Length: 280
Image (cartoon, rainbow, N blue to C red; front, side, top):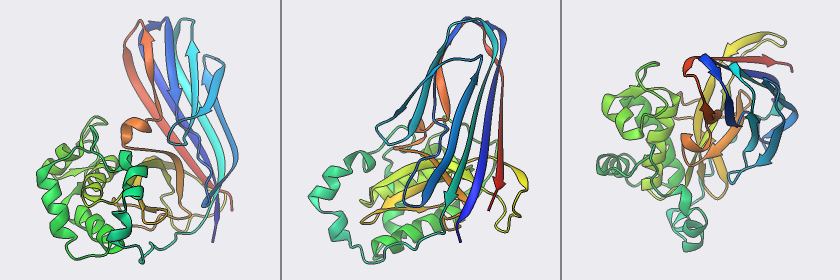
């Protein structure tokens, strides 16, 4: 059964002294796809600033804005209403030969290559081959995600946004961002195109209509098995009506909710609030 979900994401940056100017990009608007309809979306900025809205290379909606007046804080609020659909099973008919087709590898070469967050690493490459030996592609995806959950602990506060897949794997834990980056390394090593996906996950499978809950940003991956299909290596839950997709890319660097440059002052604190409400 489909869900209708309202999201409200507020990022508040406070500075120790006034910032004279800042230049920013926000990736906080859900994307429309065959499994997600975007019914409403709005991004507001305080201090008020006009925003240029465009779609980036990875089909993520971006709001770019500059502020040219002194300010002690920056508040970016993104609100949306989306309609999501139930999870779909992975395509079990896709073969390794199909994924190895030169046309496929050429088309998705950027999603097969290592990145700063998901680097090429012999240790992880060997593990991916051992875990997924003799498996069909879809079965290999399942096996690798299950292995990640068995080998890594979910430990908030033990990693940072700059932590790479290798660092998280060696310390044996992390958060959803780290689980997703490790999955990217393992999947790409086997020749399965994979991309990083960010958004939100409603924490309640039986959420009552109309109740607002505190949520958080979430990350998972999408694999190409003839078509792009999502999997969640952090919790193993099917990616369906509780997941709201906001951005996609090669790794976290392509989907950061808000980043930019500023002059003057130093960042004193960052507060992020995510509210999710099931509407239907």
